Amino acid sequence: MRRSTYRQVAAAVTLPVSAWPHTELIAERFDVTVEAVVSIYSQLGQQRVTANFHRLKAAGTATLARYRAGRRAVELAFELDFPPALIARQLLQDLLCLSKQQVTEAVRNPQLLLQWRRAAIAAAPAAAAAAQ
Image (cartoon, rainbow, N blue to C red; front, side):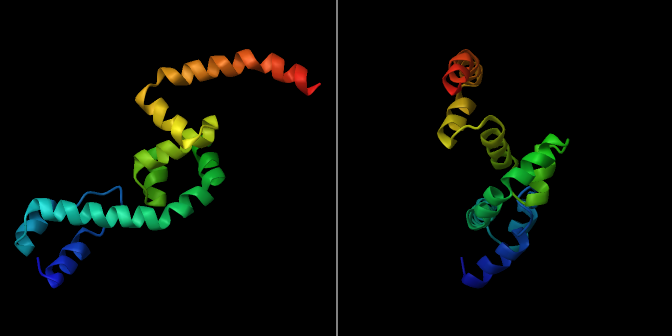
């Protein structure tokens, strides 16, 4: 693909992360494959998320407060221009005070959340006694 074509396709697929471009129309317009359009869109989205992830981390408490005030994770994702799955991960980390690795484990096996909660409740009396 020529560099000028790449730039034109990249300009056509530059949308908020929560939007999906009309890949078939863009592919037809620039005479490229749909797979090439999807690849360029994914590449640009990943670059944008990587470059701006610090903004999501910095807005952690404010984002959590807005979520607790009733905003849905999808709405927050649209406002912050991040993928909804990434917003959900960050909310899980902040809401439940989990590490990144624990969130990954919990997404793979949701029953772990109940186990961790039970363990925290069981350990609470001992922690309170030790604090006195």
